[in-house]
Image (cartoon, rainbow over all chains, first blue to last red; front, top):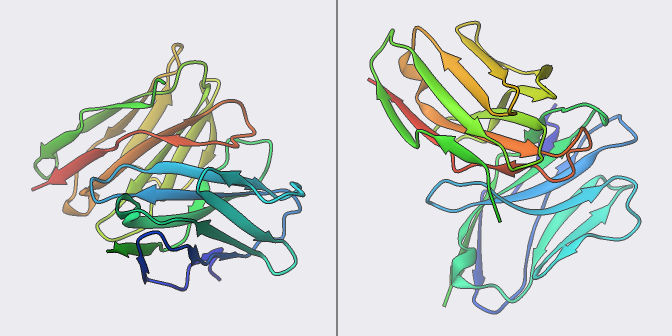
Length: 116
Length: 113
């Protein structure tokens, strides 16, 4: 079974609008971490935001916020006031096995296109 | 702020050759991760090190080996290269085992011809 599921292969949003990128996850661990990364066409992986499973508040970083719904096992990324530079591939990822330098498991990504 | 450094940024090799990729983590980061991203794919975990010891291992071929040195930099050695090894290879680093923020380097794009 997929550990990280991103059901939106592609999304369009108009400049200045907000957009939500979906991510659901599957784990039996009680302690885990959820990450979002942005990958522009140039290829680098840019860390956006992190949510720990025990964090009671949703993580926010500037225009990025993470809508964490633990019971539903979802960790959606919300980008407010979209900009043309937000056009990129976005990956949701999960880290299990806390206390070890354990891997990130990535979803298949969502390609976001911001339009004028 | 200092970021993860990877060298070289681009590498072209022929089949059956060897390649060495280098990674310099963010200063004071003691944990290094290697990922492989094929064309149109999501990154796949290869291996990680914490305090110079291997910590976790993923789908790393036996032809590949890696280590972390005393200065915390890491090298990924790839031998008997195959066409399928063509990919973007990322190194990421974090501080400690919590790894709440894993920062990726710019990647090394390896092309095997």
